[in-house]
Length: 188
Image 1 (tube, one colour):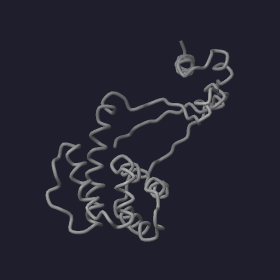
Image 2: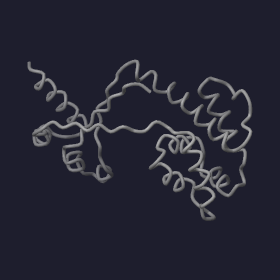
Image 3: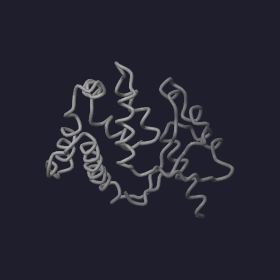
């Protein structure tokens, strides 16, 4: 069996598992295999600390925490995602209104415990330092969470799709049959 034939059988199996019938999968067979390499930038703690503090200073009263983070996510995807994981809307809103100065020091302790490294050695001297420490402990937790996956595989196949699948349309209709993706890890 040729390598291309094996690849197509694997792709066909995945598509069928995603709910496509073999006739739909056959129609979805790409004419030309293309790859796209997208590099997600590593966290830049200094830039994130500067940007989040500036964004808070510019935020209007009653700014919604999730909306605030979504604006930061474009430039700082990891850091914004970590805050979405760790901070509920109420605590985030209080921080935005400068009513929760202990948010980031508390997060440092919480995340460090999750990562198994205990509390930070010393409390941050100021809010910017606490934000930088939060990113540092989040990176440790991130590496720890990914380690079991990276020990098993360096590649993950997935499908890009949109919300019309939840509305009862087939995967083929939602993706056009063209959005089977390969994610390759080259380390953390």
